[in-house]
Length: 132
Image (cartoon, one colour):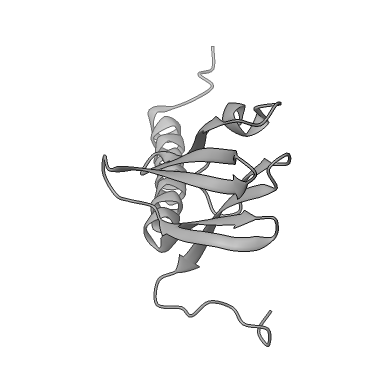
């Protein structure tokens, strides 16, 4: 009877899997450390504010007033950005959950509020009209 795998074969497969796993872990960690994330808030297409995402357990709560008594209560922490409370009728922005990666967005259509995560590579200037 023939043995399908030998000990050397198994060691080679384990070594290859370790290299692949280490590569993915390194790329993931490198991407997290080299980006400084910020939260950008726009109300009715106008920039309302830009906030840094705090490190550690610090939590910032910011009330976004959209006029006419409309508001959204935004929570910013190291775990992500979310809308904790809003007085809009559909509550989709509250139910959306947390966002943390650049490009992710929470939108409250009744209040015309857009909350997005922006990232900037450390040491690199932001893009301008010429380079984009």
